[in-house]
Length: 488
Image 1: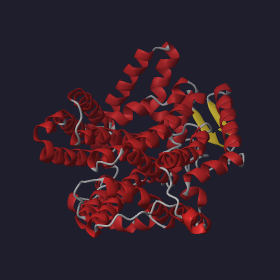
Image 2: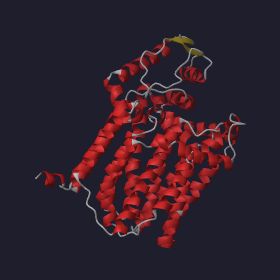
Image 3: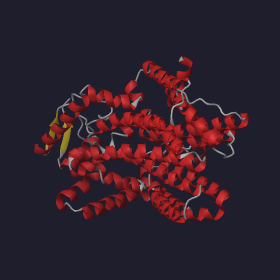
Image 4: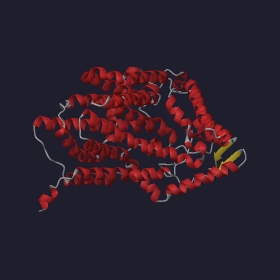
């Protein structure tokens, strides 16, 4: 009796419901914490003129024109990432401090949707998986990546950093999801629509941070190559996207402002060859940070659905050795722009997208290895049982128990913790009181130190006692004050 119970196969619709509930459970606390986020530092720097224009005109057209002006000025003086800067300039707090959370919520939803869509399209179009199986895989993988997000503080709850990296990577993944469609059969009308979407998203992705811009271009070229091998002329639908992406990437990389920015790292930034070599070193060194028992739990969770997809597909299995080597090289490219531009492996917000890339590459390799074993052995194992998922939960719980920094390693738990301890609410109340106090004060504002400092929401270099610090000057410009400092 007990044996039969453990061998009951989970129905696919039930499994889809479970995967959906898991994704909701993982994302919901992260979304809820977004309500308590507040602007800081470069949020002010990039959006201050947009705020001024909005308060003077309340005109949507004028706001967009001003955001474009910010792009132009920044392009000439600081960096070429035109699409990132455009979204940075439209920081929601420009339209009211209480609207800041709208941007954070949008970034979280975009990330979750992009991950589900990317994985779904990959399995459905490239590996010919059934729609239900592809969607389940997408929801499971999205849940894992959101749960294990690298730095919630830098890559989610700080609008400026999250737009530049997390949102940018989401746009890139959505673009690639549409490009996968050309590998499978679809109607000409759909191909035209997908081609337009790929082209538009290519313009956006090409003007973002250099990790995203580089990796997106490499993957789009790779997808186009395989589409050409299979469908020949169909690759022409992707040509506009490739051209626009390459053009955007060049416009981004050749911006006059990049020279000014790179001047700060003169003598520290590495040459092209050294950057590549150091990237491989960083890729190896960060394996420990990006893996662990929690990732093993994810492997156990994904194996059954991967086996099911592999059993049903007639596609010839890829060589896991070649995929593993190329996948690792691609993952290593995530460190190259930072070594070349700054002489380091990257800031915390940079590593957020590097980890996303690593986990997607790792899960792709895991599927390839699973499919290779299934096809080569000629067996059709049935491992879709409750004990497999129970084991995954047990391993995840063990990982949670033995992890010292639970909030930092499990973003959903961290968000839940800061909400239910009241830290997030108290922090937001303090910040809103500060906002009102600064507005009603004279040209020189002295603030009391924050009492509540939940790590996800309160940045490391919060307002300082020295009014000449950059973050203090950014706040002073935002509020139209001569000086803002903290009494410590």
